Length: 74
Image 1 (spheres, rainbow, N blue to C red):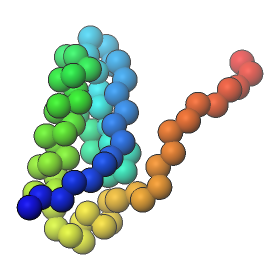
Image 2 (cartoon, rainbow, N blue to C red):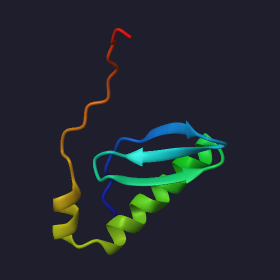
Image 3 (cartoon, rainbow, N blue to C red):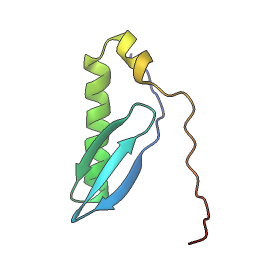
């Protein structure tokens, strides 16, 4: 049985499409829509876990990722 893991997905517009990033593993993908960028990131993450050694996963994994906003004066 496959193990479930919850990861962060950050999706932002870039040009005519969207870029998606999983900061825990520094894995990224892209798509023409938000939904496509999200689906492509999921596919990239699944492929990473299928092909990476356990040691590689441990090396890349950032256990604590915080997403927040900051306010600056400009």
